[in-house]
Length: 200
Image 1 (cartoon, rainbow, N blue to C red):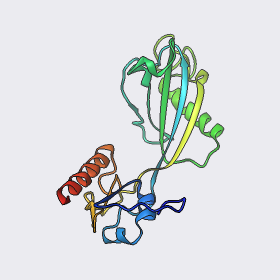
Image 2 (tube, one colour):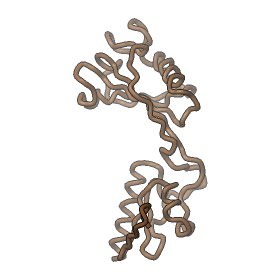
Image 3 (cartoon, rainbow, N blue to C red):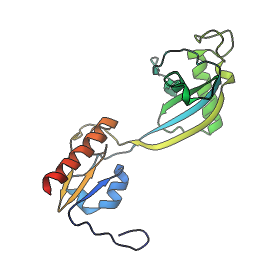
Image 4 (cartoon, rainbow, N blue to C red):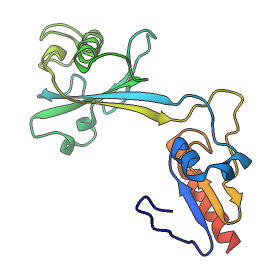
């Protein structure tokens, strides 16, 4: 049944390929045969900054928080991979945090800047950044994205390879049925497609 009141009838198979909570809402009782990953979702928060000039470091890699404490989990400069990600003469910074902190955007931005200053330098003369790179304190904040459901919960014990077939021509796939990764989601989708083809 559609939200507008219409009804669509599938002749052979229905594949539900959505995130875990949406799958539960759409499928209801049939999903109880083989429930998806349970527990609170893992969220993430992403902040983007514009940098005048080059990135602090020219390497196209993901910089990880190796110290442990702090909000920032990782940072990268997508424009070092492809210059088209930023206007000419500028760079793009992408910062990721595990979870969705209970802070205003302004508080979060200030806290993230403080951490990144210890990584890349807060002033034109300090830190580990490249010579001539704009200090973190002068980066222009572009946007903050809060994503409460970035991944399903994977607390143990868990079943990383849940069946995609729920019976009677109904199939479900997604990272809530497999390891919570891009690869896991794609694998789950492929397994659902193969199951449908095999049943036709």
